[in-house]
Every structure is written in structure tokens, then in C-alpha cells.
Length: 381
Image: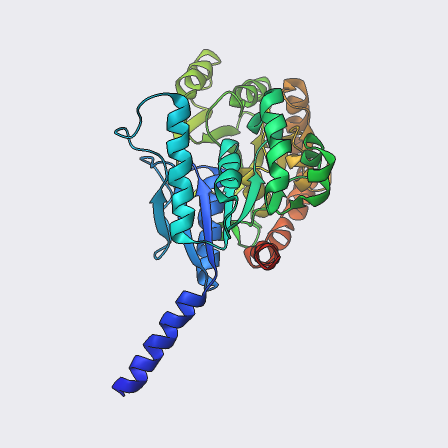
């Protein structure tokens, strides 16, 4: 019996040693869209038998928890190591990250967001590790100005793979990158996989997101104020937190909407809180493919969303079929769309029913398989 147990243990160790190893490289695990995608992918690949390492530059106070068994490594230089010129400190960061790849020997590194992608490409050069870079937001914001765009067009061809989220974002890059980049969606959070709520909708308009200038929650508050008298039983709830919370609260009070517009902050059970709502709003100036919008649509909520420049909204919504699209920053268009969907329940029901089809399209098992197949192609190439 002991001999069999020893043999099983040895075989298990051998499988672990022979397993492919994937590293994820990101700034932190702060609670945001890209961070959650990386944590979910790390969990999936570990369950598939891969060894998984999560490399972050630093820690934040409020972070997503890593699945048990996923190793965490910090790559940024310590305050004690930060001395001398910026060039010298950059070299120290470069050397530290390169040493991580040399020590861990991952088969593939996936990175995201701006300069992280540059660092991944240059630190894996002349190693056996394949680099895959991803652009999760608006490309022109991740790579603003001629210098950053030029560096992206110069360095991205040296990566083993480039992942984009929208077809429209291809045109930011040069033709070489346009031809080789792939579009891979984010999988749906399993917490939002549930039958569409079939009862009477609550007279609530909701949104979820960080309270900052880009999300433009001010526009939805002011649009709601225009319709408040016409729809006296409806409320607006903005879930999330951020630097503009106090500013938004002041606007609510100035408009006399303290009893109608609520800012409850960050909550853990988003799906439970929003699934019965009458309407979901996304008013951002820019996004990649919004996870909040994906989740609201998957729950079957009628949604109104701005047509962000990246094409993220276009990837999800067919206008007047499974959602309603308005120009960015257009308060008048938002008021009109809200008025239509609050007054026409049949249309709102149709949009919500069709939106729920996103559950099948972005089901975790389907999307994760796409990522796995792509990674395996890169590793084997």
C-alpha cells in the first residue's frame, strides 16, 4: 500500500513538473475589470493542470483574492533599491523582471495595460518564454501621443501574440499588427449565469462602475432629473465608489433628488442587487469592452450604453435589438432613450430577452477554451 502511494505521489510530482507554466503580469490585483479577468484566467488555467504564476508590480489594499495554489510575485523595486537616476531605476526594474522570467521559466507570459506590455516584450527577449500582450481598454488612451503609439507599433511585432478586444481597435495599430492580432472576449463572471428574472421589474434604474470623470455618472443623474416628474416612482442607484463620489452627491442634493438617487458604494452581491431593475445605464466616454455592461446584459436587463470609441459597445449591442446605443456625452439622447424604454415595456422586454443571449456567447467554458487554444498555439509555435 505504501509503495502504491509513493508511486502515485511520484507520478503527481512528475505531472506537475511537466505541466505547462503560464505567468500573468499586471500592475496590481486592485478591483477592476482587467484585474478580475486575469484572476479568472489564472483560476481556469490552474484547474486545467497548468502551473500559474501571478506577477504584479505592487500590492493594493483592496485586491481580488488569488485562487489557492497560484503563486504571487512582486516585481517592482523596493524603496531601498530606488536610488539614482530614472534610467538607472528603469534598468533595475528591467533586470528584476527579467530575472523572474529566468527563475520561473514560464512557457508564456500574458500582460496587459500600457507600459506593462512593453516591459513584457523586452524582458522576455532572448529567452524561451513566449510573450503575449493584450490591450483591454481604449488603445489611444493606453498609448497616447506619437511616442507611445510609435513604441507600440515598434515593439508589438516582437511579441509572440497580440490580443485585442474589439475589431475597431485594430485600426489604431499598423498593418502588420492588424493582420496578426486576434480578438478574444472576456468570459462572463459565473455569478451572472442565471435564468432571466421573469417577474415584474422594480422601478429602479441602475449602473455599476467607478465614480470618475470617464464614467460620466453626472450625465445620467442630470438625465434622470429631466424625467423625475414624469416617472415619480422610479429611482436611480449608482453602485461603486471613487474620487467623484462627493461631487456627485452634491449634484444630487442641488437637484433635490436625495430621496430618488442613491450611492450605496461598492457591494459584493451586484447580480442580486440589479437583476430585477427596469433599466441599466452605461455613460462612459471610453471603455474597452465593459464588464459591467456584459453582466447587466447577461442578466437580461434592458440597457442603454454610449458608443465608446474602442467599439466595445458595438461588440455587444445591436441597436434596438438587444440594447440601445447613444453617442458619448449626449445627455439629450440619453433622456430620449430612457423615456422610450421606461414608457414602452414591450420594447424593454424585447431588448432584455435578447440581451440575455450573451450568457451563451460569453459562457466561461466557451470563452476560456478560446484562450486556452490560442495560448497552446503560441507555446507550440
